[in-house]
Length: 282
Image (cartoon, rainbow, N blue to C red):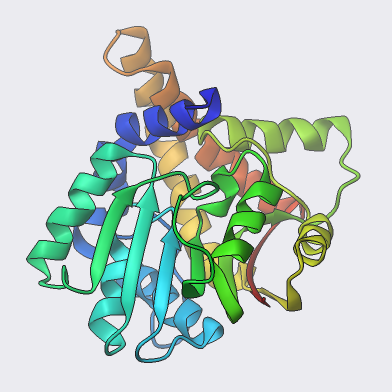
């Protein structure tokens, strides 16, 4: 296993309880931002609504086979199985603890006949080629050390005409100054994100991989309440987290994770970051 993948595993292992307390993942099973609109103005509803928006964007239909690439604790896969008839989902994740939790949730929701979770690297799944109608990546693609490897695997797994749907953060441009680069680095470091690409660079990688009908939709406005929630939590809990770190009761990784909540907001307010939904076809 690569050093980077091990860092990602350690990050989610050590911050799981933070996600439970501050994000409410036991209620909605989502470790991602919410899609806020007039009908979904509260946190839990907006987090669940993001699944609805992505499913509509990808055109997921009854009977489709979906790969949830970086499935977290199973929220999206379970939502798809419960809301679209006869959909079959395989969720992959490198984190053994999260896969165990996802399997427990699948049993509790009684969808285990149509949802499977397995430990695998989403850039090297070992699954058969041309077997999925949709590859789904909801705030997971950012953890790929080499985004081109992730795209190549998604392309290999998709059937002809299959769709890749991604919701994630991107940079607005490549030419960052030193101060801007430092903000982005601090944002990424605490969340174990190896790098963030600009929309332009990612579009280029998609086309070089072979994807067509590439579309990007800027939904920054819709996720701003989630971004603000993370920012306010960082202001409130970072001083306490620092004290607990000095007392030996929290790790450096956990403390940096809180700080990243501050820097992601600073990056967005400075116009450096944007949150997009991307859909592309094989």
